[in-house]
Length: 387
Image (cartoon, rainbow, N blue to C red; front, top):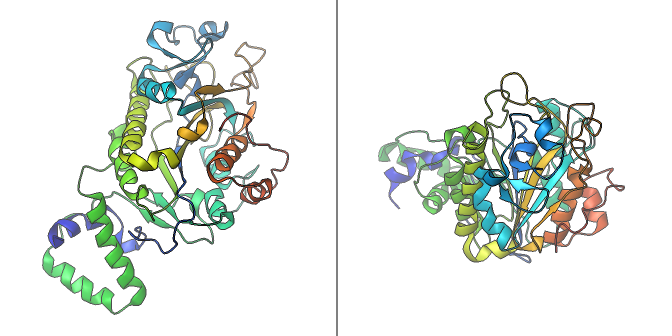
């Protein structure tokens, strides 16, 4: 291993925080199935990503701000994907994509802070709690190992079960002499010595390709998704992962085909497809869930954008979705149908989608799902989401 090359990036983020993932995990895998949860922070516009072009009220609702049907990747008689998501057509055609719509967290809020907290804790209201992904690790059987591929530890993975994290933040050049002195220092501490060695091994695994910093607007989704694949496809590597991308709060100049939001969606689709490719033989055992804390207002605002709303859209990817379909109890977008006269009405609980994804990926029981999402006994897994 070339020391200078490895330490030049100091493992691309956070060796000093000692939260980089180990290359070899202790538990032998009883299950090779994996779940990746991707949070799009900021609330992306579900009506612009998964467009209800077949709804008779869509064009009047977004007068001058609606897509032409010819611009969309049509999925059925009602819904089509925005042009930026066109690469996902491959997943749709191979029955590896389920689209969910009119979905929302169980508590009505237009606060980013509260919305993200509710989504990441899996509770029905704001409150102090560990994350639902950490609780998942606590109730699963067999191989259990979690990783946050993010600059910090997402709330969804915080809790009593120990997890790892890896960040692509580049720290700059460090010479061989510094590395040698650092190694001597860490060698005297059992805990730090193991983490130090793990960090060096992890950088060797991921490599030195250009890395993202978690902001979708900087064009870095694909490199980070490729790095994630290198970590997750390991035979005894992590099987639970949390990722996040910011930049989805489109209050102004949101645009249509080729606009700001559509370009972000294009980055997302490219990253998801690169992840699928790079997972290789591990892809058939992998489920990816993409969600955001809330949707946007149904009508555009005066600055050609959309404001914080309620229900929105999301995606579930993987061979376990069974068939390509849109999961939605569609409420319509007529003026009378809108929630509080301004938002897409929620008809699907985020926890119903997550429960279905977990049950379909890890074969969890109702009792286990209740432990992952406390107080949700009346929320049943979304029917037909997974095979």
